[in-house]
Length: 406
Image 1: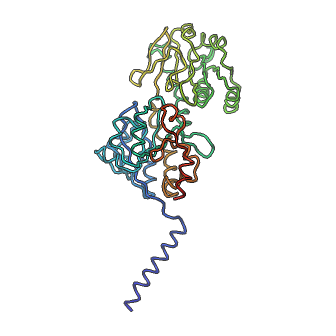
Image 2 (image 1 turned 120 degrees about the vertical axis):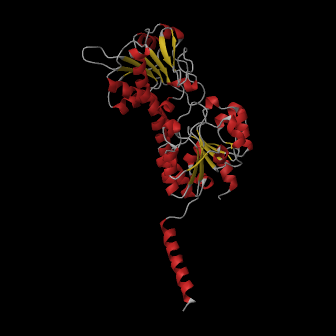
Image 3 (image 1 turned 30 degrees about the vertical axis):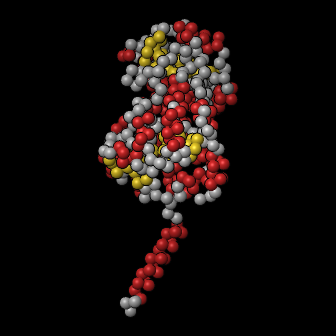
């Protein structure tokens, strides 16, 4: 009798296992590390406690550096309750096979990076240095950038969310600097009965321009939008569902409109390289004293000739009597919303990676993921970076094909 028991129990076990396999094969277990950001005035964090909780509930491990969430007002307690391991040892975080960062890799990080590590972070093209890239290549890093990560609809979800935040924030910031408290003109941004509405000029009809236009209209301002891409202007009209004053960028028309506006927003950018200079110093000189310029394109050099980078601590400078707000990382000033937006993209992505059996497996048939990869096991797979720094470019598709599946 006793000899039968083990047989019963093993077959019983075997059956439940079989049932489990039927539901969902166990994916790869991910070990994620989230360090505290020290550079780029970065307050965001790439995974919220809610995001961490979902990952941990799915069997993954998250190690975080103490106070990593402080900039977004998330406490260590929030994260430890979500199932993350909190450590005071920065090196321990960097030993995780997958690093998730909300700011680019910096020089100080390099000695801590592991061989064959995967890093998910922004890359900030303007701040990237070839020396940094070379060292990451030597460590055979696989790098996935926020900026180039695509989703199934062919858009860039993190960039889009950050642009939506920047666009919405622009008008709140403008309203602040027009008010008397900040030695502005003492003008209420928007309009009240019997007083002509505040005039807002927006240069660029992309996502930032669209959300800036939405917010300005909601506040009751009169808005005029400039862009050289007529298709973008049409799309803006369609997305807003109302007719807005639009024009292609014609210097005489632009100069005339800038002369009489209270707020001018620069939100134009090239895919790569420097933003085009649209507004000359003469145009700024002709603007009304006390008006406000917000140059969102400052990340890529700015589109006003008078723009100079400012910081969250000292956000403005005054030139020709015009208040210039040129803080590069606007979403970081609204860190909690920005963190939630990033986490909403990365958490499902990481679950997907696990289901597919890891990054190597997923890269094989996920073209959107490929698009986000700028380094693959030390090979530079981003053509723009290879040209800019004169480093050897390797086609990721060929790399993957040559490896053979698995």
